[in-house]
Image 1 (cartoon, rainbow, N blue to C red):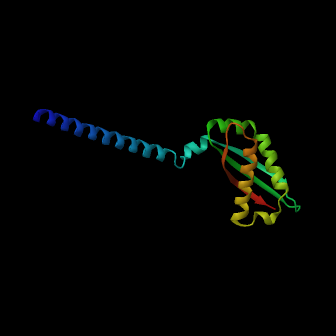
Image 2: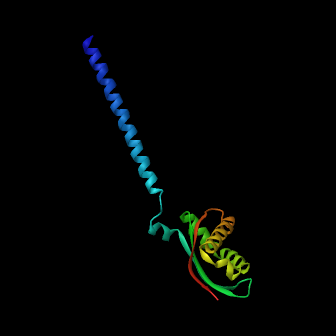
Image 3: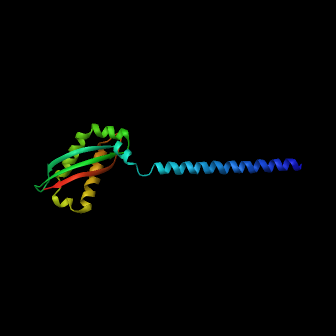
Amino acid sequence: MKGNKAIKTMIIVLAVIALAGTAALVAVMKMGHAEKQGAPSADELAERSIDIPEMTTNLADGRYIKISFKIETDSDQGKEEAEKRDFQMKDVIIEQLSQMKAADFKGKEGMAALKEQLKQQINALMQEGKVENVYITSFILQ
């Protein structure tokens, strides 16, 4: 009888150790996966982004703007779709800028509002991917 109790105790202890080890392994793997989903690396950003070359257009108040953008998408598929839709994105950008006045570009808030509006309007066009961020890469207002 004593031998059976020792074997049962040993099996229970081994089962508890195995469960604890499995739980620890799962926790470590989830933390590693969460770290990968954090901010993308510079290489990942470059791979998922397209350039909108410098554009010159009139503003609503008669002034004009020279501006260029970098559009960050959510995936390689998103980038491919954005490259195919670049003419539509340029149209959206020109339409948005033509409704704006020089005063709309004052301060950080004005630029952030433009980027957010463009992101929403371009995302309305996208079907397979999505725009994550819009970056202004050059800006001249005259």
